[in-house]
Amino acid sequence: MREAERWLRQGERDLVSARNSCRSGDFEWACFQAQQSAEKALKALLYARGFRRILTHSVYELIREVGAFEPSFQELKAGAKVLDSAYIMARYPDSIVGNLTPSEYYDKEDAGECIEHADSICTAARRALFR
Image (tube, rainbow, N blue to C red):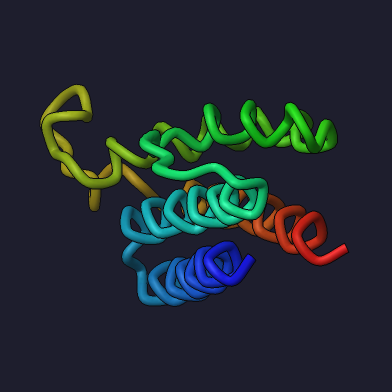
């Protein structure tokens, strides 16, 4: 349980960082940090259930795993897909079609959407971990 709490605490801290990046106009980093936040919160739940060596970075895959024992998480799958897109596209210029960089592609609305999804996942993870 202690390891699960560490992962959740870092996930929640990554969410704070995402909000800070959004405020400073670093929208691509806000999207990436939001993805990291959700990933770590979900991994916290899996660690609490005895999982070890969780190799995926896909929020969608993690939602599916968690959903096997916490069915309410299935409702968060659409947001997980948004966050998975940000995992690659917010970091690598060659992941975006055309000549834009991630900093030119992502805007405040994108960052806000990613942060909302990550917040929902973190909140649900905290509830599930500490009930």
